[in-house]
Image (cartoon, rainbow over all chains, first blue to last red):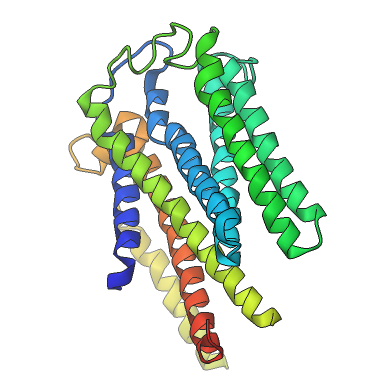
Length: 219
Length: 84
């Protein structure tokens, strides 16, 4: 139980986020109305995805430095859960957009860029799946992982800011930064990012352990 | 058999007899604001109900994840003697 203290924290954070996120006061803003609460659910998906893909690329580099199969497993599984979060981010974003931007998909630069980013990562799994030799799979996968992450950062954080975007904080669009994401939003937003990210880490660790059992059984 | 049938029919018949003394429920009982009900729970656009629903789903998902986690833990223990 002591070893799993962070899982207890994950559960407590998420219970707080759902309860507080739905019931506590939020600013009454035009168009957004109550959907401003998606800040606690949609945005943490992307934060979580970036954090997990960052962990993935760190382990890809670690693998390339030492060819330790364990690092490769960690890298793959964090990429896996990261992409799950990304897909959830896209879907929740589309639903949110339909009721605030009036279209499921308006070709917003950040929408397009995140879709491209996800496709780049899907290609990572296709690439790995197409290679037979486990060593080759791990090595080429790790190299591709680095390129994928290097492409994702400008796609999500630089390019949308250079043009007009409906997303907050992009292209002179009044973002939550314009509203200054006041402290009353923050006391739920930061726990939300932590809680959802920890949930993803939890899922990834379970998958890593399953993969380890798998390899032991294959021996 | 006949005894049981009679007992049962008398039993159910007794309900009809008592039924005459009952007070009928009218529309006004539904609109009666004098009686306390869980009105607050239904107020504010039923957001508390929605919160409950989402909490149930979250609890279910986490419980499932915990059970998978434990199952993996058991498998790890079984494989333990093989060396990890």
